[in-house]
Amino acid sequence: MASAESRERASEPLPPPPPAEIKYAGEYSVNPLGQASFRRLGAQLPRVLGRIIVMAWRIDRRAVVLLLACPVVTGAAAALLLAATARAMGPLLGAGTVGDRLREALPALVVIGIAAGVARVAGVVAMYAERRITPLLTTEADTALVEAVCRVEASAYAVDGFSDRQEAAEMGVMRTHVMVTDAQRFLSALVRMVTAAGALSVLNPLLLPLLLLAVLPAGVGAILTARVDYEIHYANIADRNVRGMMRWWSTTPKYGDEVRANSMTAYLIFWYRSLSERCDRRTLAAAPRTLRIALASSLVAGVFLVATWGALVWLAATDRIALALAATAVVAVQTTLAGLSQVIINGAALFHTSLYLSDMQAFLDDASARATVRGTLSVALPVEEIRLEETVYQYPGKDRPAVDGVSLTLRRGEILAVVGANGSGKSTLTRLITGIYLADKGRVTWNGMDLAETDPATVWGHTGLVPQIFAQWPLRVRENVTLGQPRSRDDGPVWDAIDAVGMRRPVEDLTAGLDTLLAREVFGGAELSGGQWQRIACSRALYRRPALLILDEPTSQMDPRGEHQIFERIKSIAGDRITIVVTHRLENTRLADHIVVMEQGRITEQGRYDDLVHAGGTFAELLELSQDR
Image (cartoon, helix red, strand yellow):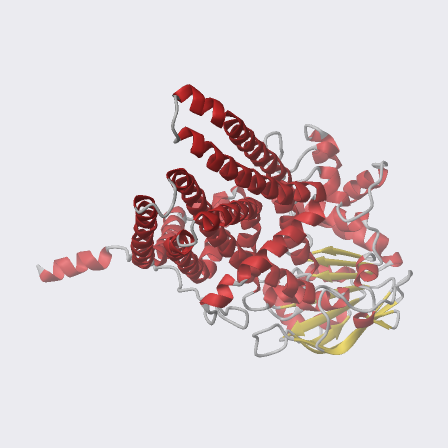
């Protein structure tokens, strides 16, 4: 019986493994709150206000002027309202008939109405200015982040923590949507509070410190709560980053067939849910801390608030303050209390926002430091020779170079084929040749000029690259071909590039031809097959008419007819440029003038096709294996 049960348990499928525990660690993963004192945290408010004003000033100066002027107008209206209230309370609480008292108080009541109206109008104008500047500011921050990432050296993507810091910066971009609102409300509340507090001090100096003590605990509690929230955010950065990537990979139609046909759906959902629950557990674990903070701050604040109202009653009951002034004091206390509360609430929100803005700014500063800034030399046409001299490149965190001591000369009019096993350094070699990566040792020269000393824009202006993993841009067919080139009204060169890869008929069959949007996910968009997309990628490189043409597995998804057409085109245009073909299909290397074989980052064999076939080396072995079917 026991044996049968054990066999039944053994036949049951094992539960899926949970996602790996992901840590946000490394040089840039130090929580900025870890060593910060409360005084230092509070001092961030003026800095973040200044930063917001500077950012907004660059976008819309008129809106900033309105945002700064409206709180002043609101404060002046509040001061006028309190002064008029004090004047109105005397007649209203004095002797005489109701009509007489109202007539005597009427001028003050009119002033109260006007002041309230002015304050309301100022609030509406501030809301208009806020709504005018917020979307522009968010767009500016978002665009700055995208531009910063696009302009970093390609090697930055391999630095540990770069992607996680980008995720943290994304949260800063999201917070720009509320930061203007928080800043405007904070300034308005601050002005109203100062105005009311001044009036309250004139009425009786005892009340103001009691009010401050009543509100201060709420401020301390709000900042401590913001600190807890940020600690949770910081702990979840890595998991949230990976979860976002997996969400896209799991839900994009591009990989829907593989997800379904390989029964991945259940595990991907489990995986996504597990990461979400891991983030939720951290959030829920902090709930008792925030509850204790809220209870303690509310209890202390409540004690001092009761003391404030008690003091006001005592002052009125013992005739230490006139009844009319006591009534005015009630309004002043309520106004000051509301202002103080809003200062605390919006100040805490600003402090909270400042943490995320600091992440964003830190990433932008780091990305700026990693931007592609090299020399100023310009590469001129024609590019007659590209030379690699003992070139070495090692990826961050790796224990050996991806390219190790490679020397090679490429000349105009030649076709070079690069072959080798996976991970042998072929693609890294092409990145060094194009200047996408700079060599750690040795150098790469174009026409004798070291790429480390040239303006990369002048290098990349003469290159055409078809990478192994190519982009399928959600743009029209025309832009998918011309992307990266100056706009032209003439579609002739576009059709020439499309003809060169055999795509005229498929493009003409699309609903709008060159104007067809290549994105099935968008209404009215169309989709191409994998081989057709690869032809478009080849046409993009050919359209550029580059001095250096690099094709990394350019026909891996094409049918034999398409593959033949591409290589025939490569041969026909080879005389005007340097051409590099990276391929695992060794038969395709017949067209090359020179072949290099790479192993573990080094060139181990080189020569012409016929020579390597009979040399009995790695090339001959790989060719034999490719034909052994």
